Structures are given as C-alpha cells and as structure tokens.
Length: 215
Image (cartoon, rainbow, N blue to C red; front, side, top):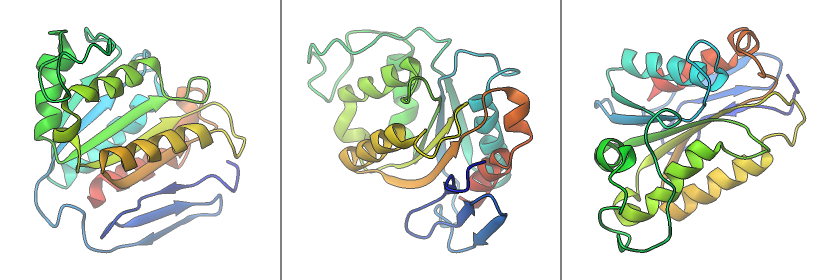
C-alpha cells in the first residue's frame, strides 16, 4: 500500500484510526452514538456478487462491527434492485414522492429518512462512484431537506495504488457532505484492492470493522 494512503474517521467525538503503511494508531474518544443504538443504512453499489466484490466485503465488515456495538442495520443493494435515475422533472418539489415508484421510493427512502447514519459503499469506476450509487445520490433530490443533517461514512475500493487514485471521489464525497450538511464520521479508501483476496489480505477490512464497532 502506498504510504500516503490512509483510512480515517473524522467528526466530533469520533475514534480515529490511521493506516500509513507502518501500522495502526488509535485514539479512543467519546462514541458518535453517545452510547445509543443508531439506525444505519448501508448502500452497496457493486454489480459483483457478495463472494467476489471487494467493496461488499468492506461493507460486511463494517456491518459486523456496527452490529457488535448494538446498532440497527438496513442494507440496500443498489445494483440488484429496480431503480431509475432522476429525470430532473421537479415533480417532487424537493420534498415529495418521486414519479418512479421503484425500490428507491418504496424501500430505501423511508429507511434513509429514519436513519441516523448513511453509509455509501462503491467500487471506484473511472475515478468516481459507480453508476448504481450515483443513481441513488441523484434521487436524494426528492427529499433533500429531510435527508440533511445526518451522519455519513464513505467506503470505496480500487485496483489502482497511486496517491491520486481516490482524489476525485474523495472530493465529490466531501462536497456532498458539505451540501447535505452531513457529519462525516468515517472514510475508507481501499487502494490496491482489485480482487477479493487482495482486500481480504489487507488491513482495510479490519479498519471497516473497527469503524462500525467504534460508533
């Protein structure tokens, strides 16, 4: 792993974990949840199977950690549910039902509105999020105000190892956090993980678990 790559948790009261190629350092502080059970929505967006996907592996490790801390988890499979991209018709008025009565509208949106924390999980495709995740993000439009003010986490996997590999996606995520008035409480940028055994043998899975367990 390139020594400039790292995993971090940020935010008020968060525990912090850093990987810099030379071990793990942890600073335990007040939990984000303040000891209460949180409702967490995890959005998987890889088109690959659970057995093959590198990003789904990170998501499951996070879920295992979060469940160990007593949090309630809802997982949405953006790649295998019926979804439609936003058409920009403004029928929703930014605070109403979408014209598409699909899985985003009926399954995901109610869970997101009730959630304390949203976890976005994606493979890196052409230095951005997958089309499956971008479809979900664009559909935030129908409930922009009500989805604001939540906590969020971003996890991504990539084959590349260059220090700039995740730069565009990281900037996109942090801009989204700013626009949605979210509190970012974790980021995992798993470079050098182009196939399942690579991510399984890396430190990224353990970090994803610790992020979940530390909430």
